[in-house]
Length: 149
Image (cartoon, rainbow, N blue to C red; front, side, top):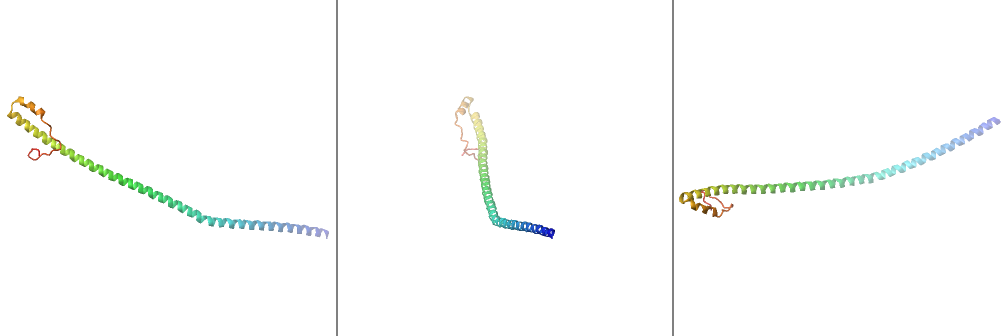
């Protein structure tokens, strides 16, 4: 009997220890569940704000890139316009140069004709007079007959 009493006490102590362990585990489980719920709530609350933050950052970046693209387009348009203006100016000067070459050729022919007329009509001592003739303007026009207007 004593032995049974001793085993009974021992079993009751073991049962009590097991109850205490189970209660401790239940408290730990409840605390862990509460922490898990708190973490999940925090995640749920932070996700939208984090998502909104990322969305706003992306919108800002898109806006910045669009502004940069507009600047590049404007610069490109200005460059193209400047290139066109330069090309038009080059064409204008090319035309003026060609006109000047044409006038120079015309004047050279006219001068050659006058020298020929002068030399055929006068003696050689008067040829010095040609040196002192004023030069003609390079911007005067030459008619089809070779006489300047």
